[in-house]
Amino acid sequence: MRLGRMERTCATVVDVRGETALVAVRPAAACAGCAARAGCVDPVAGVEGMRMVEADNPVGAGEGDVVALDVSPQGLAAAAALLYGFPAATALAGAAIGTTVLAPLSGLDRDLAAGLALVLCLLLALLAVRRWGRRLARRRSFRVSIVAVVGVGSDEGGPG
Image (cartoon, rainbow, N blue to C red):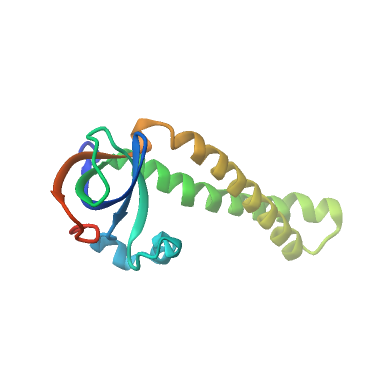
């Protein structure tokens, strides 16, 4: 994937909310091999096998319209690094700190100290990711955008 291009997929508008729209997107073929794919499905929305995504709606698409979405690859890469990379690196750093600093200072077993520091650092990282994620979601480069209405009616998210 070249990072200079926008990635495009189709979706069905489920609800319009002012300048944004909630769209149902069929997971792409690349999602089939992802271990976290179950986390992308929105069981609350009652659309099995679909992801619910909030998208900017500058074209004025209406409920039931099939639309083309653009997603910035840079935004996807940065979001993946933030959501997965930062907590993993922080957890590993916590384990190292627990082993080298906490265990000698507290007299705890090295493995116990490593585990406690790992969990603490992971929780702190997840809180930071949540806070940063909300800020980044406001940036245009991190948002999904509807670029065209390609049909009227529902095809349950298009070809994905």
